[in-house]
Image (tube, rainbow, N blue to C red):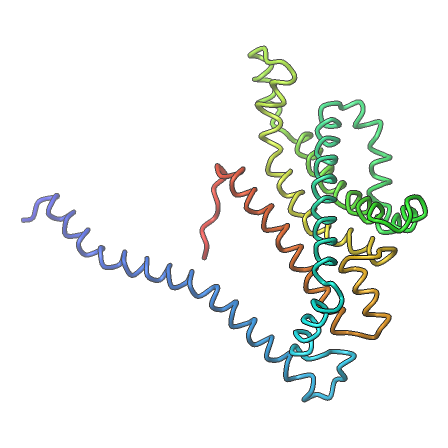
Length: 282
């Protein structure tokens, strides 16, 4: 009769072929995801190129993909596309950084002072409800047709998601941990640094992800209303010229800027919140 060690060895040997198969299935699934995404992109590109002419859709409504590529090359040569791209990207990045910093500082300050949070919350709510894009004409009347209005609109659009997320995190922090820190005679600054700030990081990062996408919207609104450069200006110019391909190209570049900003925030979040377990990919 086999011993317990022999039986355990037999079970391990019998189960060992399943382990490589499971690993291979996991690898195949991980490789299939990007392949499927690329396949979908190829199908969409082919449909965009060939379906509009086949369906008789005029080019001024939906130009084929080849026309967009040719228009992009023309804009690069004749419309100084690089200057407009850099202008929009720099304003979006600057507005995102300033709005995030301002929103985080105000959120933490109000979270540390319940009195001021109650006093200012009606005004914060009113400003949050007010449509931010409606401030663009006002900023243009104040500062003129320059970079300042679109920067201020971007800061304003980014500010509130960060403020709300940080303030919510401060209000819902674990009170037991705060009381424990007080029991160890920690000062208020130490409680914030050791307990409240680390607890707020997930909410802060979530707000930053939202702000990264809103920054592109804010700078585009500023350029559409009164900009003299940038991709939003190209959209307005292309609309006036009935150049649908130019509008599509500008939208594509704005989307790329938003993806880059979001990706930078996602990479930062993965490094800062590395201690939070991630669900496995399926």
